[in-house]
Length: 340
Image (cartoon, rainbow, N blue to C red):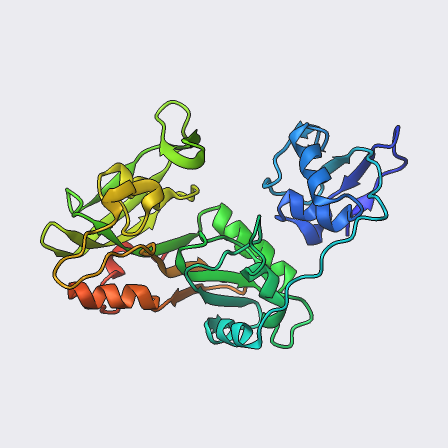
């Protein structure tokens, strides 16, 4: 429960974060407890520093902790004529497909094999996304599942959902405290040299050519570490690479693989033309991102360790066949340290 302190001063409210909201993103907390503030106005309040957490400036993605105090500034109420457009109708076939993608289900955790091309959360011109479909994944539970981490829209694979508030707090803490390990499979243009190693290259967000992207920046970047190894290759043309991010930066794997000169196949944003192989030997030009969240090992909220693997998406299955890569379960085992 979130409680309001004595009396607001000059219209300012000071709200205390309750135990039920521990670990929640601040913008989600704000939307839940200050529902009369629209999304656009909320973003402006964050941007101008009017929302404070224990007296400090914050970002929308910061996490709240039980007992912290949130400063909620005064703001005009929403105009009465402002009416939200109804959500788009979701087809029964889409819901059935998503339900069929459940890899693991218990009383506290769901694990989904997210399809490539589906965003995890909504945004501009993104009406259909995982977050909008969570009611279809209740399976009789009182609450809708909660997102506890993210995948890029074009990245397929393992996506963990919490089925209770307590499980969400535990799983969020596991990600935050790095008591989890994620394994990705990708096909890259070229073959990394050396064929196994660790990439240490700090990453920062940059704006270039009208596009926001992530780039290696030794001065302003945040620490980013990725372990990788080549599993198989097609001459010097392409390679199947297993990757384990040791940090969780946005677009980390895409930026790191491009940084060492072997961009992920289909990743024009980071690899440019080199990320698209020319037609040759019967293999057509491939334009879809070939990055898959293959497996996760995470501390389970009820105790012990949960490990889940996701089968490859159809476009990567076809590319594996084109290149003669043989998917064998367990070939990635040496990269895992199960003590999470």
